[in-house]
Image (cartoon, rainbow, N blue to C red):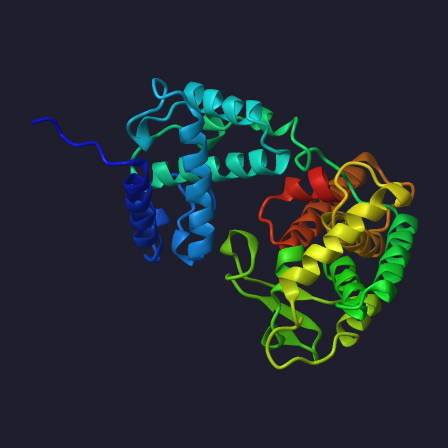
Length: 339
């Protein structure tokens, strides 16, 4: 009697259960030479069920977009050629760039999970090539907006807040916190009072609200950032009365005002995050200039030493800004946020 092939849903449940068990071990990454928690996603157990469900939905959407003849019977049998066919089918069906980008991120997670589970040895970068990101809006490097644009954007949000009967000043408060703290919109909308340290001006983001399930602490260093936190009234639990609805309303207002402000490319609150990253990187660079002033009339050996020390300091500055934003890779800051 032929062996029954499990459905895609059962295969996904089996894989996620297996990865969560592996992730609960402190030494999961050491069991497979050459793999580290950052590259093999050993911490699947810290992802919320909603996050894992979103990944599963993305995987199933691409599999069902394939022609029945092209569908692999097992997830471990997915090849780069078949993945490209499924991705092209999703594009032909009119999926938005944001949805397609979610597909690419989800399938890279799956590729790393297959490696960790011992299902496949195909690297994530081979199954999902970097070139697929190039034509998607939001993956193209956008860089920060200017200070003038940010001020004008805020003025338009203030005008909308005056007209709003439901949200009012909360729209401006959320805008200011996004601008000066570098939070993602979803993170800001789901803040709780217990995450805030109003005395030391820090925000402790838990794994349940961060992208990728990585907790981090945001330190509000500038007077503007601290003023933005002080302007928010103390709450009993949730920081905003209707956080998700407030976030959607703020996004809609910013999208509508983006053309008047002169913003091209991505037009949502994420551009404020890029400006915050640029400001933080500029502060680090100013500190480097003070600590490592260029030598005057130096010999070539001294100049080489100064250049090397400067590069090390610049790398540390980019790493600090990357961690502030919740990323691990240095090139995310220079490629997508700051210049």
